[in-house]
Amino acid sequence: MTNDTIADTLTRIRNANLARHQIVQIRATKMTHSVTQVLKEEGFIYNYEEIQEGQKSHILISLKYRGKKRQPVITALKRISKPGLRVYANNTNLPRVLGGLGIAIISTSQGVMTDRRARHHGLGGEVLCYVW
Image: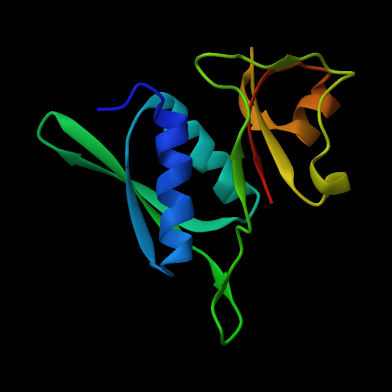
C-alpha cells in the first residue's frame, strides 16, 4: 500500500506505456478517478472503467497508441507536487507545459482540471503533474 496514490498511478501508466500494454489497472480513489477523467478528456487515454471487487475497487485504463509502430500518445508523465513538498500556483503563475503542447493537471477548489481550464476560470491550486 502506497501513501502517494497519484505517483503510483503515474508510474503504473508510464510502465505500461513502455511495455506497450493495452490496459493498466490502478487503485481507485477520488483523486485517481479525477486524474483519469482529465486524461480521457484531453485524449491521452481511450477510456477507463471502475471495477468493484468486494471491498476494493480498481480502475482499468485503456491506453492509446498511434501508428503501425504503436508509439504511445503519452510521451512523459512527471509528478510535481509530492507529499514532502507541495507545489501551489495561483492563476497568474500556472505553468505551461512545453509551450502549451502538454498539460499540467491542477487540483483546484472546483475540482481537478487542466492548467488551460483553470486559467480560463481564474483559479489556482496544487500542481499535481505534467503530461505530454
